Image (tube, rainbow, N blue to C red; front, side, top):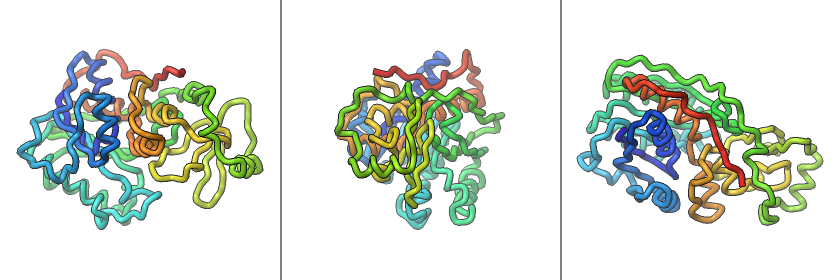
Length: 318
């Protein structure tokens, strides 16, 4: 399984590819990774042994190695409800056409793209139609898209994302249905968390007037209107949200390890960088078990039959 990992962040796609390859008894080789964020590059190198290239726009297509799979969580801010939704008028939105450029030049057997679910309705649906037309009519790939939720793949995080899957040849492809039991928050959260993660006394007192703690841990979510919701799972991690956006039992911020666990990163994953950097990285990452389930079906479609099911989210809590 030779793949390239564009806009790779800290390697959620890479981890998912490794899981699927290991389960199937094949090798997984990342022949090129690229991300413009220096902190993400350092984390990726610390965990996978090679440093991603920088700006993909500076990578000539002839320098991209041959590969079977193109994987890319292309920048979501131009389409996100948390951003300005500039779409292709935002320079980051035009980075999709770097994917197009490499697909046209290298013609991999398949690709998997990921973005926020708001891409579906951006500009009245015209943006997604343009992307689909580019991939199908211009490049000749067989393409489908679906919106999946990390909650359905074992993670205690409500994170809906659009996945776009394409194949160079006509194949039979079925989307994974999820149905993996959710890992309880108590198995994600750390004990003896330092006081430095606690919200201010004012914030904690304000939360206490709106919600009450229960017997099981919950994560309290404050939206832009100041309304506080309480769930036995996390709302979607966000790279640029307020530090009080998500609070465990209305009292403290999530730790770096907890945020990575919510995305399905194993505890063996090395944390590189400070709290702000890791928070941004986790907010930009893909949910590993959800991506692994999609890649597993991609491998089915390409003719690699499974030997056993890809496991759901699994965690070791310290």
